[in-house]
Length: 79
Image 1: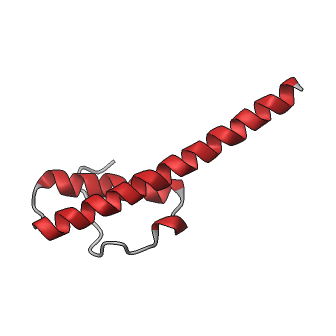
Image 2: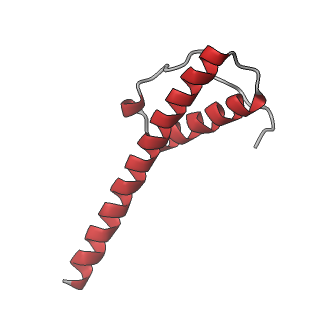
Image 3: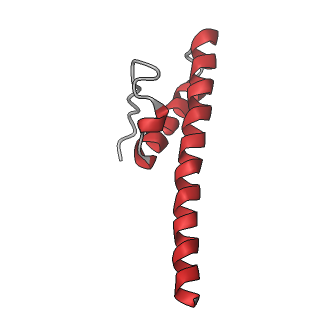
């Protein structure tokens, strides 16, 4: 893994609802790193925060779906 972090130049490049779990997670990591660097304007920081919140919700939705699938599979095994 490289220590260099590459940020996307455009916020909201892809609608969050179209991202896979891996894409949303990677972009969320980039958003966090960018915010932690402190190199953003207030407006950009707010936009990054909002995008990060959406990305986190997308990741959580994917994980909740995976958990539901596992729970259903376990339920079917015991039935």
